[in-house]
Figure: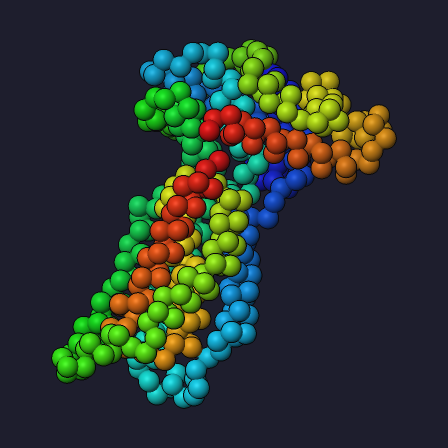
Length: 213
Length: 172
């Protein structure tokens, strides 16, 4: 086929434009989160005295500060990475936000608690449950994010997938934090981190396979 | 591109025609150093044009268009080099975008797309051929085939998607 003929066919298809990719991604994240939230409320629900804890417990509030410091920068990066002309180098520092908040929380907790208490706070009540639930609640957000990124045109498929995985885990961890009875930053550092890292890896793997175009 | 995204066919046609000349120069220059046959550049130009079309919703209208087109061209050129087993390092610099590709090249058949055209259903191939090679409008094709114009447009869009995908699969 001659290029000039192809151009005729393409321009006859001018009206088929899809919604802007940023909008598609935002809707996908919203829908994925909503489904995950329905699963969460159906199966687990928030802890007793949720509202009291939000106003009285620094540690409880810190959990959400941490999970949102993972999810929000990941969303900003994912939105950029969906475009081919995005240069991630300048924005990668955003990914350091979550670890920085985590580190500050750990230091604060180590100073606030006597050394004898560290171990029991870290082990918490139900670490295995946490390890299972965070990846579980990540599934629908991740599926929706990968779907949206496939509509995009990333030039960094592995990174985009990893950031998508990170975002899905950030969403899942935010939901799970409202149920989880353990509030110590030491518990978060030991167990939440595993779920987040696993989902980031899953995202990277999916990215390398599904986000090339 | 703004007019094109708003659905203006003639503005889009003009943009793509000009763009294809620029792309031809860029692809040729990018491939010159790595020994890719000159005849093969047209395949890549067509692949880039299809990608620009199918991914145009990823252009953020508050950003300049040039870097977006460069990024798409670069991605497709790297893809093509990878398929050839070459080290995929391509410099795409649209700032030196002078139109050096002679337009006659547009009249030379690119072979890849013909092969992938064969993967379409008979009806869709007919629609694509009528609109592209014979230069009919979607409405004329719709009348001839007894379809609605919308159905012809949908078939055309699906076919372009299928062409881009077949390109992609061929590379894997």
